[in-house]
Length: 266
Length: 322
Image (cartoon, helix red, strand yellow):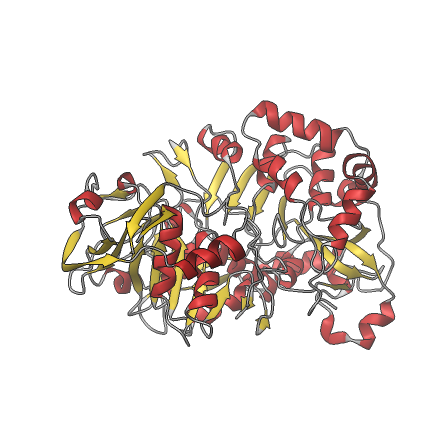
């Protein structure tokens, strides 16, 4: 059966399937908020979400109000209402298993740029909002998941600006810089594919592509040349349940989940 | 301790003893009424060149009415601590009020990003967490806070943080300098006339910023009797002696919402999101900031009772906000 969906929907669903129940996850602004809501409703009812605005374990109300961070719907039925210094302290002390943030640009070691494009810091070609809490999430959580639109030009040899740390310039670099041991990026979810990092080299590695697509098609035009796993998984398109929750409950306006129209066989 | 690395940002640093002396001389310990209009509060407590910080977000409980008053009074050369910012930095830059921004989250949309690219405002990159840690250091009366973030990144290079070798572990540790804003703006659910204040729901660093701030302006949805604080002291967010001015501003976060009071006005927020050009920015400021006398006038002429009634009706999530 052929199913129709947007690339954004596929990205949210793929990320939601990665999360593990009965664990903790630090959720960043934007797309990760939708991923966490979908996962909570379908897959991980006991996954405890933490937010930099001080909410621990909310069961967010739907629909999601665009752009909100810390509004009454975002913090609904939390276990604790606190503040930013305490929220990040839970991650700093090792209590947070997963982190999930967005990215404008990444490189082959999973370093994240959400600050600027171009050579000049004072007069950047393009300026973005900056770290927000992304640097904290990427520094302190055990496993960080990056969620980003699949545009090959966003995968570069070297990011124009390291906003939030991936593996920096290779194995051991995080620890050498003083970041907590054993942390780092774990998965990169895009609107067409799924990447991980090779254990030894910490290089970005293609793990899966949307069912019906081929690895070369997905990697074409990427400057950073990711490795390719021996068996590249065919990632299932969004299920009916996922699309129902996304379209009817989380974003009935359709403004956030809109995107490139895609089709795949279920 | 050996300094291993040092960021390039300009930092406005206050020695903890200088801050203590400021508190000794300027912060009143006696309980006196501090009720002012927003015009008086901004005129008295926000000066050109000040560093300003605020709590919470553009969409929830941000001190929007106070920010509009700052723009109306055309303050200049402000240095803004931007955190959970979608629109405030853009409006302050558009109004010619801000010349420097410490970035946690710069803001949303093309207007502010272009202002940075064109060099109309200087930015220094930090992170939400490191700015919160800077505020915490200031609130503790110590010159810096050690953190295990920023390390290894360009963010650190462009911030004012330093990396030193930690005397306890021997490894590198990042130190962020205490941040004492000249002005701290807070919009709260309830306050008394002395400045005791309650915030319901979460916050970023309301108490830290109020403690770190040299001048603290609290705007409040509701004025309550001081006795209420003594009846339920666990609910006090800010004690009166931190506060310099109390401004009674119902709907003071509009177009943001305030939890259990009124919903955000997405329609108006989309107007702000749509601002891209200088012309659009000046048109917005003319209509909604310069053309009104004060917050009450703004609500009467630019928002209207029917809209406020609707936003109030929609704020039906009440659990925990009392």
